[in-house]
Length: 250
Image (spheres, rainbow, N blue to C red):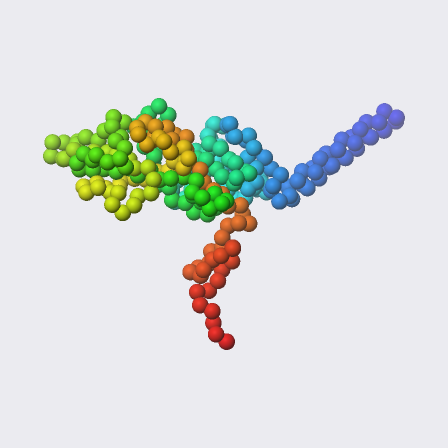
């Protein structure tokens, strides 16, 4: 009888332990999602508001969902642009550094494949309102151009005519905002990419250096969930509030 009582008592303790454990998990599942942490590859502290695709539903915010591919690649989807590889997340500055998947290391003929269109919660500006990244325009010209604004992409992107009928074209890039008069006659802007603003300075002489800047990636500012401006449907917006264009007279 005594042995049976001890065995029964042991089972009671085990069941009690399981109940306490499950209660703790249930309690954690009810938190606000700020206590979850995940990792992927070299990024070991993926936390609120970011989350991985297969994290529990209470973790992070769905607008900041990242994908982990083969435990080496962290991917963010920036519609309508496409997917980018995440290189770093800075929670203090609220920035994220990404690189276009079309850029390949040690292959300067590789080009970015996604146009850098941004929507909330991502921005080209930091918390102080300064640009984090600068554009790189890919330019095609029908004639050679001798300009300090243009960087020749040859031999990396040496565009030749595919037939004797077609005219040979010349490929260049311009780093920085395209202003009126920057586009020479016979030239057209074919593509645009982004590079980190400070990283691009002093690297405008050779295209190989610009490609290295593209490989390093570019930064985006990230609005936290409570900072995303509201959709004001045609009204003015300021300080996360919507205002009508005209004030009705009573």
